Length: 171
Image (cartoon, rainbow, N blue to C red; front, side, top):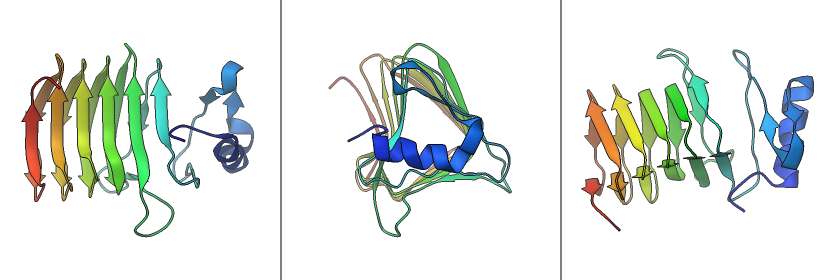
């Protein structure tokens, strides 16, 4: 649970065909072209980037949507750990436990919408995150949670209808 299990990797391989390259230790390297999708159907899974970087480049009119397959379902969300910088723009994240969890790295999040996160829409620990032109809404618990030497820059963003909009401090 929490990462890509064998069943999920099988679905990814089938979906991406020959564009997915599985490296050592079961690591997935893939490039998704326009209008293609990455489907992870197993309950309790998410996108877990450890030590690498993540680049998602959607657009305002054609965002990349990250959501559970089943309506009303939940998934873990996106986790990025390690020293590398990630960049995400034009994305909609729905019904995740954590929309984005960033630890010991950096994330630029632009033109994003994070809806209905169960625990936190954005969790930042020992990392830095720049949030620009984004909406974080309807979080059941916390919109943005910054802890343990986290740096969060919020510019032109909306924090709407979250139980708690922002928490900053040590755990």
